[in-house]
Amino acid sequence: MSIDETLKTRMRYNRISSIFDLIEFPMEILFFSRWRRRLFNMIDPKERLLEVGIGTGKNLGYYPPGIDAMAIDISEGMLRGAIKRARILNLKVSLKLMDAEHLEFEDRRFDTVVATFVFCSVPDPIKGLRELKRVCKRQGRIILLEHMRPNRIPIGRLFDLLNPLIVRMMGVNINRRTIENIKKSGLVIEREEDLLSDIVKLIVARPA
Ligand SMILES: C[S@@+](CC[C@H](N)C(=O)[O-])C[C@H]1O[C@@H](n2cnc3c(N)ncnc32)[C@H](O)[C@@H]1O
Image (cartoon, rainbow, N blue to C red; front, top):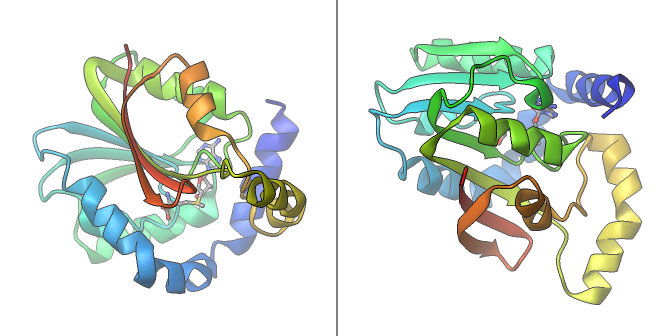
């Protein structure tokens, strides 16, 4: 994806970073917190973890205690929120400014790679997903919590219609075909669970 698109994404998230938690507060209380807990309950503290697109660090409170974790994000504004949260929670997580499409890690470094609500905004999601595949150990897992375009025709079309407006406001695409993108990246989907109709899913994938 062009540097322009990456820069635009970074700028959009920098712009909303100070109010991001406030905007998401109702969804966090109603749904997200429950889904985050569920995802992180699947992770063993002995695993080496990478979180991609950590944002303001809303998952940090759900990390298994003592886990060896690294996390990255493209927006310094969002990352500042995560640094603050990690400090409050007294967590030793290495937080870095990095692009999911160009991860600066060697191949097969991590046991588990996690991303929550990220591949709706990574400019080239397939390229990003390929990077997750590359840095994940062969026997490792990639666990995603993602919203995507619903399959039913009228509501899917409505999401297409609203998408340009939502992208401009929030940097989020609501009509990504994320399951197809995961398959196109070469990852093998082991588990796909509908959490909110077919719009929000918990996905467990393997590098091969
Ligand atoms: C909707 S927020 C979700 C944040 C967090 N994962 C959560 O669950 O609250 C999307 C995050 O993805 C990050 N992001 C978007 N494109 C990225 C990229 N190419 N590389 C790294 N992070 C990216 C944004 O900066 C933002 O923090």
